[in-house]
Length: 198
Image (tube, rainbow, N blue to C red; front, top):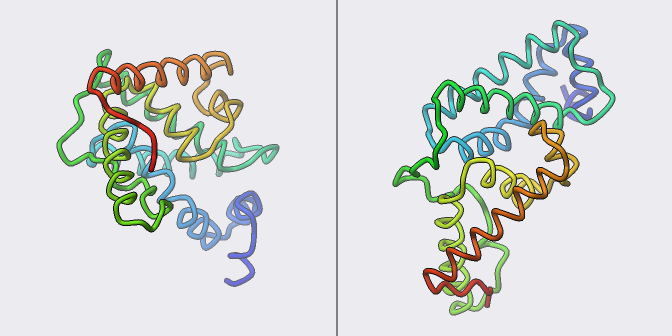
């Protein structure tokens, strides 16, 4: 088992395809939190996120067993693409063509940030308030803009990776980010929110 845990995701995929269920367990454990938080962030519904997460990994198992994963790139990027497609199918099935109202319990608390700030109590308080304001404003963004912001700033993906994962051109991904930033700035202005960390 120690040998398996030292393998890359791509090597674990090869082990799983060759019959090692333990390799898939490790692969799932490595990626579970990251992809579930991504799904929850985009769909904003715990039950839907659970369903989409289960569907994603069921589809991944089928695709791996059918040999539809070609290890030419990173497994994480391929998995993100599969996840994105399932989320888009879910949106189509829900016929959501409007901005979704965020549930009261979706405060984006699963996104870390406060622990990287200054140790000064006053600065921590100010910074925590700013991050809370930003998270509330992000809840108001359309899903496609919210998704690109999450991928760029919270998953640290390049625009090329974002474009591949969401099935759009790099220019479209950049455009979505541009509109997201414009919307965030507009909301900050309208509500007199000062967005500079202390």
